[in-house]
Amino acid sequence: MRVIIAEKPSVALDIARVLGTPKKQDGYVSVGEDVVTWAYGHLGTLAAPEAYQPAWKRWSWDTLPMLPEAFQVVPITKTRAHLQLVKKLLRSCDRIVAATDADREGEQTIPKHR
Image (cartoon, rainbow, N blue to C red; front, side, top):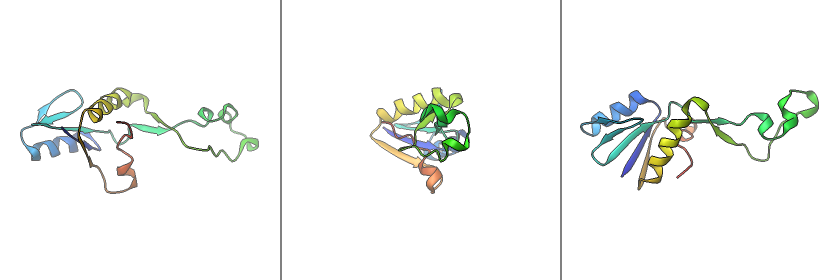
């Protein structure tokens, strides 16, 4: 199965229509053996400062600069369920197509989980 990830539902539906006769599912569109889903722009965001250091919860000159060793990406609350669906689809596929903008932001739309 091939999973195609678009940035938003309307683009996913357009892609599915080009591929054949789309069948709408909950959170994705199937077309033959292909699945087209979307990311609502982003499915994750950078963790809040206090996730790295409790002292960073309250802004203070004393805690600057706030530079974690590695940045953490956490699910966006309103898209958490959709992220779980996308991760499930990615684990069951043999190919992933990033149908997002051809830039850094578009590349970061694709979840790094498989």
